[in-house]
Image (cartoon, rainbow, N blue to C red; front, side, top):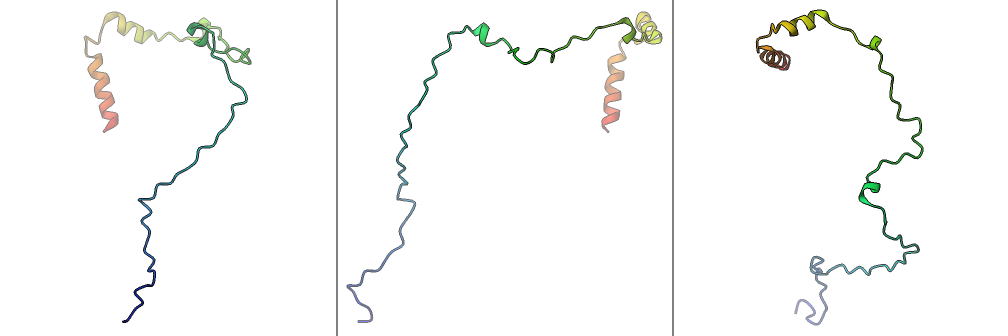
Length: 97
């Protein structure tokens, strides 16, 4: 005989067949948070703590605007005749290409 027939030949183990069993950790929850008894309307309100000066409504003065008289006149006399939309589309496409 060329080899010992009683010798134990180790075989490759098929790792795919052996499931990895992980024992779950048991964790205790120190503090149980109770359900909110607030209404949906109260929950949807934005928080205001710490945002006192963050939201500022600027004053709108007439000095902030400039009246473009030529544009106002063109709109009043309706000089576009419905072609304004086509002009905008052609401008957009000419900038893309």
